Length: 237
Image (cartoon, rainbow, N blue to C red; front, side, top):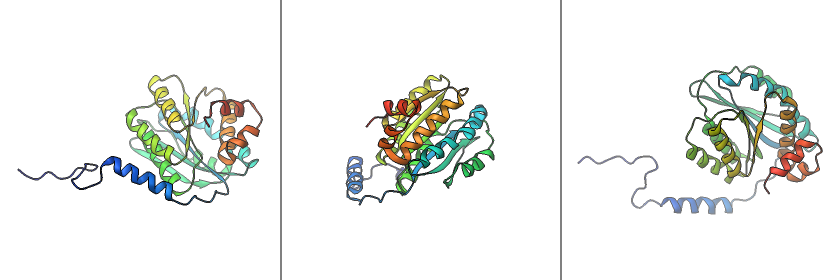
């Protein structure tokens, strides 16, 4: 009988067992010297840019300035834009440090039909957090068309990097709500249902999340406004 090739991820005789690999990874992570704190907080702003999302994309473009305004009072913010659309297209921008630069990136993007690619957003966030700390992932969407177990695995990898996911759900899709809640729970983030007609609410919540990303829980506790109080009440220690 022909010898079968080893499949990716298959356990080979003499190779470390999966549990041993996990233990080795955790030991390495514990042994690493702590990173010096970044001068600015870092936040990934990720959006579903499939066809149904254009009105909310425009709203997010109008509301994103609130993040920089709030973070500037605490210590500043760097933001990376991530999005997916069409058939297999998923992209992430460079890091930008002001609202005008982020708006410039967003206004050049049109929504295209396609399926969700939340897993790729989570993978990108984990890679970015491996390079330097990322305090928060903000995700805005209305659907989930992927395997939930796979997404939970990716969320767990992001949690190991210390990045909290703030999952905004527009609408009432039950599969999306279940997934968004679980991703938020696994990363110790917050699930946030919202109405696209309430632009001020979105801006307030984005500002509160940016305050957390730039200054941590203490900065959020010191911030004024209902959005900061709402976020702090749901943010696990």
